[in-house]
Each structure stands twice: as C-alpha cells, then as structure tokens.
Image 1 (tube, rainbow, N blue to C red):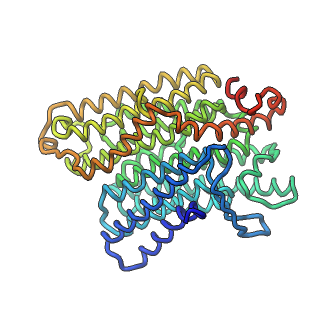
Image 2: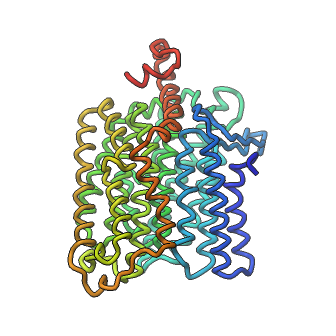
Image 3: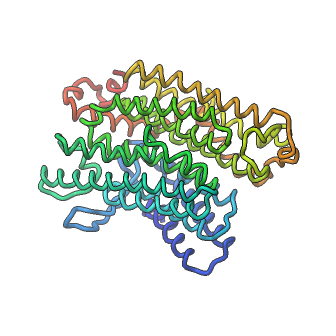
Length: 507
C-alpha cells in the first residue's frame, strides 16, 4: 500500500464514497465506513509526513502515461509546499465523521468524495489532473449545501456555484494557453506543472491567463473583493461543511496560487504583486471590521475566517522565503484554530438551539473543558505567542516588512482587529450571566474531549516548538523563491552561498 500511498489516499475515499451511494447500506453503516476510510487516509498522511525527507523536491512520486499524444499523465507527488495542506486534510477530516450525525447517508458519501478529490488536487503534478480533481471537489459541496443547508441554502448554493464555475472556466482557459505556449516554445506537448516554470510568457495573452488563474484561486481563498459568496455559504452550510470549506478548501486555493501561478507567471506576479498584496490587506481589514458588527455567531466566524485568509494570501504576494514559509505554516495553524471553532460552534448550537450571541452567556461556568478548548483555539486564531497562530503571522509580517513597509504596518495593526472581536465574543458567550438557553449546557463528554484533544495539543506544540514543522517547509519555500528569482535575474545565482539559499534568504 505504501508504494502507491498517494493513490490510496486519493482513490480509496473516492471509490468508497461512490460505492456507498449505490449500495443499500444504512446511514450509520456509511458513517462508520466513512470514518474508517478517513482514518486510513490519516494513517497514510502521517506516514507521508514522517517519511518526507524535507529536501524541497517532489517525493512519493507516481507517474503513469494517460494521453501520450498530448503529454497528459497521472502524475502525483508531495513536496514541502503541498505537505502541510495534505496533512490539514488528513488530520482534520476524521473529526467530521466522529462529531456530527447527518439525516442521510448521501451526506457522508459526498464528504468522502470531497476528501479524495482534495487530496488529488493537492498531490497533482499535472495540470489536467489538478483541474479534474479541482472540479470534482466542488461538486459534493454543491450538493451538501443545497440539500442539507439552512433556510437560505438555495440562494447560497446558487451564489457559490456561479462564482466557482466562472472561476473554473477562467482556469481552464489559462491552462490551455499555458499548454499551447509550452508546445510552441518546445515542440512538445506537456501538462507537467514543473515544466511550465521554464516558459517565457509575455504579452496580453499571458496577462489574461494570469488574471484567469488568479480569479479562480482568488474566489476560493477568497481574496477581496471576490469574497462576497463566503458569508452566505459558510452561514447556510452544515457545520461540518463550513469546517471543510474554511479549514481545507480555502487552503487549496492558496496552494493553487503558490503551485501554479507564482512559478508559471513570475513576471506578471512580480508586476502585480503590490496590488494583490493590498487586496489581501484590505480583505484582512474589511472582513475583520465586518465580523465586529455581526450578531450571528456563525456569520461572525465566517468573516473572521475570510479576514485571516487575507494575511495568508499576503504571504504569497510578498515573494520572499520568510513570508512564504509563514503562509505554509499558517495554513495548518488557521485550519486547526478557526476551523475547529466552527465545530465548537456546532456543538454549542446543538445544545442551546441558538447561535445568536445575545442569547448566550455563562458557558464557562457550566462547561469548563469546552471553554478551555475554545479559548485555546480562539487565542491561536488571534495569534497569541505560544500558539500556532503567532508563528505564521509573525513570519508573514516579517516578510511583508521586506516587501513593503506600508503593507506590513497595515497588516500588523489590522491583526489587532481580530483580537478585539474574538475577546469580545468570548467574554459575551462564556462569562456573562447564564440564561435559560445555557443554564443546562453540558460540558464535552469524554469521547468529544478525546476527539478535540490531539488538535488542541497540536496548536500548542506548533506554537511552542515550531522548528520541526518549519524544517519541513523551508527548503521547498527556498527552492520556490530561488527558482523564480533566478529566472527573473540570473545574476542572483552569483550572490548565493554554497547551499544556494542562505544569502537569498537574508537579502
């Protein structure tokens, strides 16, 4: 199994999810089988993480010719850029099956299909393979929100569908342009992502393709002003689906920019990086201010998630090793903090039958374990030193200082907005006087505590001792930045030390 470990992680949940849709299996049976598959994916993910050497190149590579005439192949692999996105999906997905029950077995089947497609998109080393899995992972989310969402689910589903289809069509056009440009310049058809970095793309078509790619990934992140689908979709989706959208799918949008846009369109990225960086900072500020005004707990967390994605996106556009390392680190930090806050909120609403902030209070006195876990995740989301959220944000802001001081100052001060609304929320919900809705609130059971405990420990370990995690990321980040820099300015190579990395990192 470990010889084709990535294929197992991709196709096991896909095939089991489709099979369970067809077979006459009970809802509980599907949930148990779904959990078993998610655990297998987790074990494989831990194996990949443990065996990854950290050299910066693709590992666990599997390649099989598919359409030879066009140079399309089933090509997958993992490097330091994709490793943490993969781990976020593998570690967090089992929690969905463990914590929440659904009305239909189809719900769990769609989750499995989404899991397989997400892993496929993360591991893809071929443009066509990436695009196929990118499209597949959107379909289950469409059905889950449309069938199992809240009262306004239809409007939310239509909105997210229009956005994602438009983005996907723009991406498809850009991929075709890149492949044709590769054939024109080399005489060979290929869709291998690594080869696209060597292309010389110039002119109006290159700019149009760059814009198309950025629209597709900017919608998924979401990057301001492409974020308007998010509040409705996050609010109307079931909690487990909101968790997946926030913790995993948004990160694949970030990953897509790093993997496909930055190395392929390095000239356009360098030209428009300042504009994109301002989009990230404006999104950070705007969504943070919008979060303060919310009375609905879930809607507030939706804007909070969008705000934090702004600083994660900013780390890409700064185009230096520190910022990119911070972005990759923050992907997991955000997934394990803001992501599980949605799960905590799901438990809170299930037991109080409300998510209106004014209707809550005194939860800390009734449920100290729940309050403690929530506080740790909340403080990590705020970027408190000693938690995972601090390391990533610090590295991103450090990289932003090297990129543009104005943007760095705006990003650094805007982070304070998140502290304001999170502490205000925590004080209102957990420490004000209990009422009829929270008077009988039950603390986490032993089972629920064990489900959340590993993630809470991970938040603290990543904050207190981040070096083992950074060591996995940094070589790939250095290689990524080095490749882009030397393509734009070959004289940079002469300024590097024997490792080819140190002076670039420090300049």
